[in-house]
Image (cartoon, rainbow, N blue to C red; front, side, top):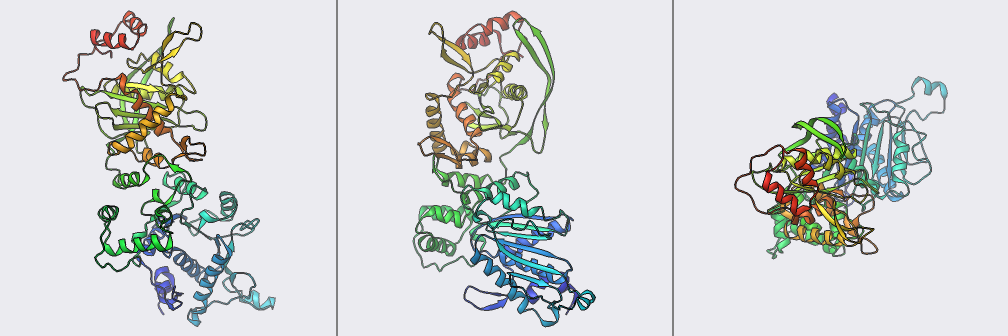
Length: 572
């Protein structure tokens, strides 16, 4: 029979296991292309001596449950003391997967079938069925088992000790999905023999999206695997010369589809998705972003954003990642602290908070918009735009202390030709104060009424309120409609996909999602009018300003500041 066919999971599956097709036929199990990709990902983790931890976002009916059950079955019938649990979203699915495992056993060659203990539950217990304790002690059998159950029951999996878990259609589990998973995972040791496969089609913005996002961000040990619908070779219909729509032609070019795949897509939308393209995208996504559909009406054109994201998938637009490092000195003066950041240099970091898409060009004006951590968010952002065109050239995203955030803003502004910096002041004015203590020469100024005299006066920073916020959102809508090709950051685009019109019509992030990068971009767009929009041929030589010059500079308005910079040259 061959030892290798017993020890090699793929050879075992394709040599000995049989499955039931949609047509009701019993046929040998042969892995399709998508199943092979999953199998290779599992084997890669095993070769690296790591616990197998994989999360799968997929289109419907691609066969991943079938492969996972085959792998679980192989382990259970070729190892001692192997305990696996299969959890589905509903009883019907639980029954189907149990019947699949039972068919594996029933069609297994007789000399390979381990002893099976009778059970009334949906489980296969591979041990000696005898009731004679002496005989059982002499020949206990494998003492392995496969248990199938439905999510939602109280304490599911908590009393078991497991080596393998298959969580099927996780996004559709009832109740507390994360709580259920957390309880089960306590029964799994983090050993190289263990395996956890989480798989599902999407179901809006629920806990499964959180699990997926954490895997993509590297927060968890799970390897994220996405399988688009068009990888399934059976998803095809005959083509008889039908006229393709403009959208279908674009999809054909972008996703490298053929006419038969487009005919299946057209058929599936009409027959399986009630002619609703949004349902098709959720059930049969072409990209991860398509899978997760917001519950509210999107503010932006999500189809165009998904196409842009697909174009940026390989990250080719990124020039470098990192942050600025420097030596910091602080001197107390009567006018407040004076901070100097000496020896500023760029430091490359694989997971750097600053991403550079385009290096600064001599004489080009830039503007920076910043959104600070506040209510409901612990993230600070900066967006850098080429003020001639509005093109995104860099961005910052991370959690910070406010002073460190302002110092990175200072360095980034100086790097981009002393860019105009506009940072939101709604939750704190401290970042703008730090920029003043750093003597940064170009800080955005807004007009605000004096509470005592009622006269208008200048104040540093951008304030978002009932007047400025609608203008900002309108500016973003125009920008995403007319200049989407100027956005190079996938994180910014992903935030745009989850930016919706809420119940009251307010434009805001979907519950549990972020809009910090969008707000930073919106602020940068609004601040552009305080920065020149043309490139200068030659920059003036930089001079060190005296304390008196700085005092004069900070004592005047935005127009006066521009005049003094022109008169004295840009400060160092």
